[in-house]
Length: 129
Image (tube, rainbow, N blue to C red):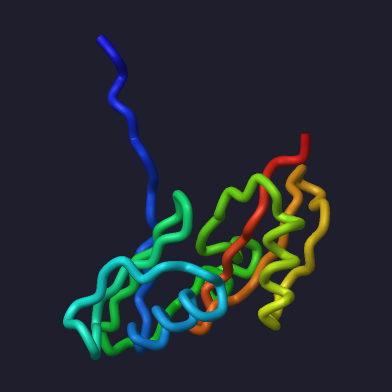
């Protein structure tokens, strides 16, 4: 019997302004907005780029990114990127600010970090080979 596949996992971020979060990911990071409800002034939305999908919901409370709870556990999402150098160059061309520059990390990864418009920390990278 074939083992059932799990095709992906998606972070679910609480935000103050779902429309603003969707705009940031679409306009600054090149994601596609695949769903928003209600249309026009959403309180919930989904963005996708390649195999990465992130959901947002505005529920009237401040976001609580991981680094605000525990500085040593600062990432809210790890996005696997086969070529982090190329993606960093794309983001830099859009004037996206990195919270940690593209580099080889001491834990065996190559990538970079950025904070989104709500303070969530995303790591874009891959294991070094």
